[in-house]
Image (tube, rainbow, N blue to C red; front, side, top):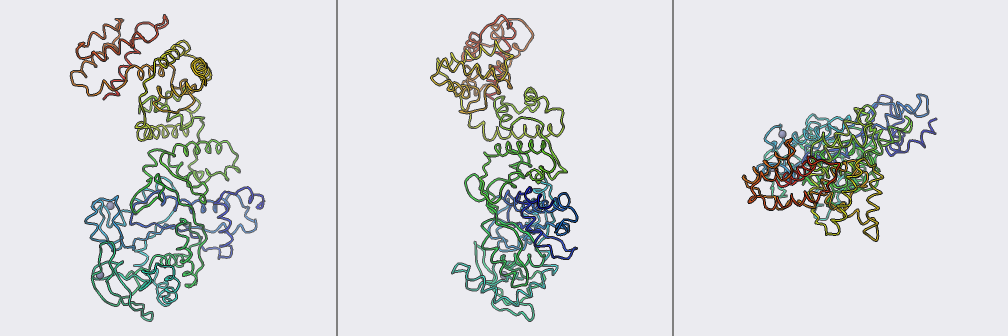
Amino acid sequence: MAAAERTELDLWPYEEARRLAERVGNYPPEREVIFESGFGPSGLPHLGTMGEVLRPAYVRHAFKVLAEKVLAETAPGAAAYRRPSRLIVFIDDMDGLRKVPESIPNREPTARYLGQPVSRIPDPFGGCHPSFAAHMIGLLEKFLEPVAVGYELMRSSEMYAAGRFDGALSLILARHGEIIRIVTPTLREENRAGWSPFMPLCPACGQINSTLVTAYHPERDTVEFSCERSFGGAHGCGFKGEQSVLGGKAKVQWKVDWALRWHVLRVDYELYGKDLIDSARLSGQILRLLGGRPPLGFPFEMYLDEEGHKVSKSIGRGVGVEQWRRYAPIEVLKYFLILNPRRARKLFLESIPQYTDEYLDALRAWSAAKEGARRNSPLEFVLQSESARRFNSTLSFGLVMNLVGALGTNDRGLISRYLKVYDNLAMPDPDTQDLFHELIDCAINFYRDFIEPTKFHYTPSDDEREQLRALVTWLERNAEASADEIEKAIYELGRKHYDKPGKIFSLLYRVILGQERGPRLGTFIWLATPGFVIFKIISSVFLPVGPLTDLSNEEREALQTFLRALDSDQTNPVSTALSTIPAVLWNDVLQRVRQLDAWIPRSPNRPEAEQLVYLGHVARMSYVASR
Ligand SMILES: [Zn+2]
Ligand SMILES: [Zn+2]
């Protein structure tokens, strides 16, 4: 049984969980399995941070799934999976501030504290927290909240101050010579002289990055040092003295610090970015010197932001989680982070819709799968069963986005009414409906931020106008046509006018959507309704936004009177509505509307009143667009 499951559950967290089970197989039964992840609170959390916490959480989840759902209690080795586990997010708040992040307020006052541990620097965000680090930790907690994974925070400053590291610090001091011999050859030439595993906290100026160790006294747990280093505009104060390395009066350099943590917390598993391979190797060597055993894990590929740089926290560039949630559900991010971490994937904000559709496909497959197969889906980790979601709909995010774009509205109700036409089965299911509304909100945000600014107005040639007129006529006569019938009709029209019939689609995308490409038009027109597409064509061909901009109050009032006349229930012809406007004000607009009136095909099926409504819509759209 166990062997058969082995080949079935081959997602990377399961593979990692099995390696881990081998490592911890011989531990006493009560010993916990420790997962660790680090966070540097000198900058804001970002998507890289999310990956660093979520990925070990996925391995931890795989460990639990194997123990609780897959392996029979009597299976060989099953006991290894059944032990308790913790995920520690270790906050290095003893770290000195090297550079004031660009993304924070009060940069100038904060710069006075350069070189001091971030746990001792005042909160630059208006003092809502006891320190700079505490504010960043608060952000981290808020940041991790939506992903709903279990973890515990551990603060370096508290660990040092409480003496939890003292035993290991004495050991490091005793073996400082060997540590220096391991580390210095890996440093740049100019940094080798005077490198020490210890960074004493200067009692005179409070800096930790400015101190230079001059002598070691392992027999009394102290070092001698002078406060004389300069970096990034901060300078040591010149203090000289001897000081204990215990109880928070010093910290160790970060590669030594990593080894120290692994050792004291007995870390079994830690994932880190590929850029830290060398540091991890070095920390492993130091750890062995202390009598420890390096944790398991593998270096993952870093994902890149829109400029192709690594997502960097110190300058706050790249995609933040708030930004992500503006454009896609948080589950899509969790999904993105479980995809093969050994392969670099570029992360552009613009590529979020593509990942959303990938996620929706996976969610549909997951809903349809049997329980056993579900376990090998990334969704087992994204949803972690208790927050199970369903999506009983064939809708794609791409289609929702196109609809939002074409309707040019942020009215969620209107958009869902349209989508209901497409998939009315989706509506009764509350899970589906929730996700549905979230997708609409995200599509609206995405449209506003990325698509709308790229839209253009296209002015068709006379020949193209004829094609558009023919399409309008066809749509009016075939208001009940299916998506396939509409697609076919467009194709036929294309055949009449072009050597390659597909060329007509480019024209329609330009005119209807203001873009070069778009969704399958038959489906789109059917969904948006032929009537709406007719408005769209008419308004973009005959009433470009330009001349209506910069309305004076007088003009605005006149237009409103005109619209009211159109809206009223009277049966008077267009000319009456038009007569409400002083011609001197509206020469240009009047001409366009008259043109429009003549252009919209008259049909015995459409009474005069309906003609007015068409015109009213067109005029209103131009008016709204011009504001
Ligand atoms: Zn604060
Ligand atoms: Zn000093």
